[in-house]
Length: 473
Image 1 (cartoon, rainbow, N blue to C red):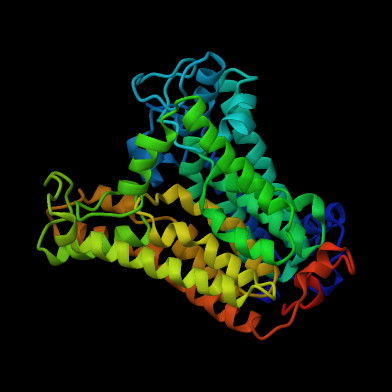
Image 2 (tube, rainbow, N blue to C red):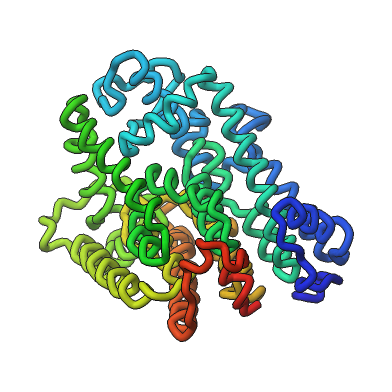
């Protein structure tokens, strides 16, 4: 597929603005006709994924909303539902209320909202500032800002790696989980962007962008796994400061504000959200635990329909609970080994293995969460861990259209076709995760054979990071 381009990727300049301009030129001047056709198709998909302007019975949910579960079925009449959870939490805090309360089903200012389930520090750096604007205006602005950020990063990455224009176009512009992400106003894609900026800043030897890792870790806790490695590699001030703020705010909130983040919500998140139990396969969940649940559900002789109720097996006699606990334990032990083995040399593959942990071990892994992997895919392409062929296959599995629409059109259950498609639906994303895991393990093996002193990058000698100085592209 490198024949799609008529430009030498070695000529890419290193400045951020010049790289974005270079990416623009690659797309609109140097790309061949097939590549421009692909770009046009992905551009159309990208525009239609926005949560505005759908014609028909349910306005303002996006033209492609029926293609994903969250936007097409569960929440199609509630655009911005997850965004309003953070917006409303800020409003409750400003009014002297408890942002974590579950006693008020309706939001204070927003039309609707889910429970606020983020760490207390998120209230101050994100929830309160969002309350500067009314709910609907804030939601629209949030959507537009992230939409434009995706375009800027698309042109930046294409400018950095023109030979990867095809898979970069697919991931940045035509990842179908973005439909649900934008419809819900979720924060997974934002988290991925923050991690991308922080790690890419480190690879470029640019301290300014490295600070983006801090709010990413405050937003959702799984980037905590990166903290020891980043500390070993020279982030000696940022990591302790980020951890101090995170845990200080959490402990202070629990004891001073008598907030229930550390009790009821934390118990729920670490219980049902982390470890799964055998239950009717639930459309929308697409992590590895959901696949394990589907396999055992079918082996037990149950159909795929959701009307059969919940299983009531004791945890220690529940095979799904046992296997999800086993996967989480093995993953934690493996990451501890990775941290120790890479403590003296930088490894993007090691960070990638920590990045995908949520998808491997957490039961509450929804389709829109896969948008957090888009920036990771871009990083792996930029720094030579992915070739075009594997990147396109990963897009089909992780970013392409899911089988949910076909499954629900077949009626979910009752026919052989519905049963087969239902099972394949739960296989699609986890197969992509397993392929990505294989790619990262191969990258880790190569990284462990290289010698690199990351402190030299942080000191600015030279400003080129390991991704440029020792690129395998």
